[in-house]
Each structure stands twice: as structure tokens, then as C-alpha cells.
Length: 112
Image (cartoon, rainbow, N blue to C red):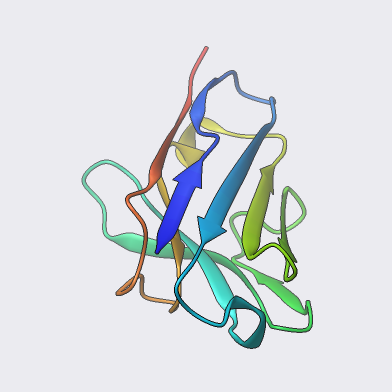
């Protein structure tokens, strides 16, 4: 199970911290992903982190977002910094890059 939280309304340039609490699988052995879906668009890979903490980011978020994990607690994080209106969307924690296995999502809205 994957349960996201932490979304909300934030002004451009602001910050937000997303959390994904996992259960039911061996979290510490899996690469984990954040994907998002903007209104009217397809799911988009945002970032991923390997079981040992190697992180990779999409070009749109590189330098602004930070993905991290706590293997002991089975929790995945995403720090959003310097957000832009185009970061608006539903953010999902996922077990694959394409979001085939994902949680229910948490909504992030960037607007003044």
C-alpha cells in the first residue's frame, strides 16, 4: 500500500513537503518513484531513488525538488522548492516509473 500526503495550495516560489507511507512489500529493496499528472496531461515521471539512495530527476524539477527515503520506516519523501504554476498536479508515489502501481495521490496547486 502507498499513501501520499502533504499536498496543498502554495504560491509560486514557495515550498511543500510530500510524504508517502508504504506497507505490504519490502520497501528497502525497491527503487521508488514520484510521478505526477497535470490537468489534461498524461502521467509524468518526476524523480526516483534507488534502494541505496541514488537519486535521479526529470529536467523540469532538477535543482528544485529533492527525493529521499527512510528505509527503516518505509517512507518516501519529496521536497518541492521554488515551485512554479506548471508544477500543479496530482502527485503519486509509485513502484514503477510509469505509475502502474501507485497510491491515491496528493494534490499540489501552485497559484497566487
